[in-house]
Length: 626
Image (cartoon, rainbow, N blue to C red):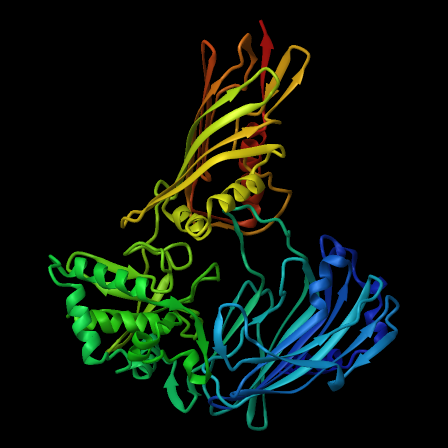
């Protein structure tokens, strides 16, 4: 108990530290390494008074080391009808820890939190922007938010971005002794302290000396997130709707009551649903026809107003207006399917590249809604916010993760489909014709499938021919190119694929020195990975395959070509092969990356595997004139 009291006193001291604490020279060298900013102190006092009511008090001191920390100068604090900002203030210190300027209420700007995808939101934000100063300098900000309605509690990340290092970061949570409270931690080194004081129990978490993480990101690699504390209530009150997070079932019951009856359509829309499915052979074809009708007749906009952040708009309003957010479009599609006699489930998902949900910790971590349609032999999944996705296709935004079905019996955790390594593929075929000066004409076809299909669909589906040409020029590793023709085609089956076919002239493809012509045959090279030590996760395996024919210039022969390679490890496989035939050089390359978790102590082995491939990709062919 004495240790807990000491932690509480320490936190209060940190909240009122003297300016001398902010001397730049007092930052340890190990925390400056690789950092754009150093968090000197980041502390929070979170006081829960009753279900749905709490006060969040936060104070942070950050030393900005260089221009890459520019984005940290603006502090945004969001509010709405269920939360108000009591105050937001700040101080700027110079390199010696001396106060340059204090900022208060007159320096705080108030804006709508409207952004480009939003049609309407009642969210607003208080913004405090610190004046620019000569680096390094230190900013300190403090604010308090009072909640009158909450469905969940904020998480606490002990380091907020990879480019930061942290001297001290901690949070205290004050909970009435008779109130249930839940938490779980990821990657924390120190245990929680707790103490009872009068009618409250006080929990304290604190971490120190967290170094900056590498800012490098390999395309298929995710570096594990920093130490994080997750907090959650058992009982909550949001917008006058009381609920429980005692189990996924009970939380799903709250969600079901929130959406119950809102999918009901007027009679004319029910008749329209029956017209759409007329002549369909089975429920699967009916569901496909209805999904494609919804896609063609609605568009996505964000509507976030009070309880509307969790409760969908009425299906009849979507039918009338032709737009809605993810909740509304799923609810509308559910109504159309119901009119056609097909059962479906409103489904909550934590979309994007966020960390997965903890099946043993019930929490409101979801940020998106999709639709689950059970069939006799399998399950159909519908992404209702994308007008271009094929029927029963989920892309990288929602694939391979736990989701919560909202059923009349409550919430049920299930998993969305995943793609295999071979399904996630990029396959390039083509002909490259070189002339005597190192100039080349390329005719190439690239086929994308699995998760790669969804990545490129967002780019290419809406691009004009000129936009595709600009994209190819920007994406190329060559600087002097001209795209003469380009075409994008899309196969929208339940196992969809797309193809990008193009022709281009590359003036700097090869290098001519006297009678020697050299070029690098690999069109899509692997990136090198710097020397990092980190927990790494490859979330999706992938297969990348190239088969390119090089037509050699008249009078030239192959003098030196890269040796064949066939590398294999637990991370994947790599093969690289050349076959010379008369005036042709046939190049074949195959790179397979496995879905795998790599602990920090093995990250060097992974780096070696990838960098061996990256080096091989950069080897050159040397031609000499006969």
